[in-house]
Length: 254
Image (cartoon, rainbow, N blue to C red):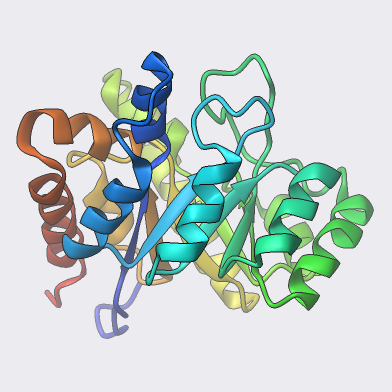
């Protein structure tokens, strides 16, 4: 990327799913993910992300309703491409919906959505969401076929899956890490050239965020599990503030 290319403001979306995971471990009402969302806003988050899974393992239907009632920040509603989730999204009409792959047996989202293989079905699935005023995002791997398919079906946004890059970094597989990072860089630029807004997320930490934050085409990072884990040791406000600091440092002009 030429050094003269301006770097726009990079937004931070804070995923509150795992506040709900801790709450659900005891079956009570504490800790409340809606309180976490309010604290995230005070700490400088630009949006809140919540994934309502089919099995309701963390975020619940009531959480989504309360977020819609109380949030002043935009809600990014992560969901699988199912009729049940489409109906819930159309009832609440969140600012954004992010379509993600979902398997009941997985611990967390393991990869990007297979858009190219399900292009016609997904095009029909997202049309009512788009017509309802929701900004539609598709969570995909850094792959040109998937990016082109997301563009063809009318998505406004793609979110690139950064998990492979983060895993390779954590496991010391440096050549693979660098190759994954270069793939993310190239596909960010390619998606931007097609007119798609580019977001990224999954597995980002203090050690990995700056390399991705430096991509000028990336407009938003969605980070959750690491921030909630770090909050155990330093508190949610300082954890988010440090992530924000690193993001802004990465975007600062050279």
